[in-house]
Length: 82
Image (cartoon, rainbow, N blue to C red; front, side, top):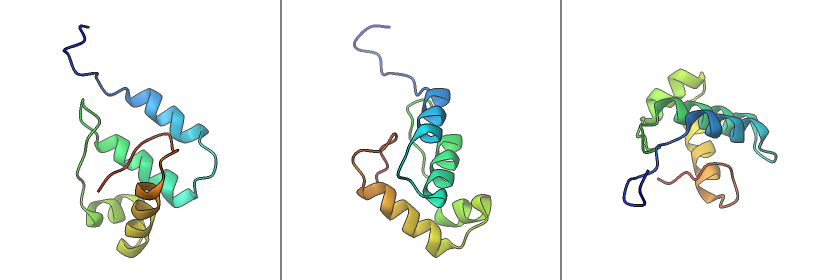
């Protein structure tokens, strides 16, 4: 791969990083796993709060809290932005 080509998102590595991460709550880990399942080849995704709530069996408010927590972290295995 040349330097000009974008790096392909490595789903298995991302899942392993989340699994091994310490200091994340259960809800945050579940949200990260679900976001990874939605990610495209570049590692981006845009599922709605409703979709995440349904897929994670959580309330929409709890999903929003988990995403806010993840977005505030700069040291986690995956960078979450809003």
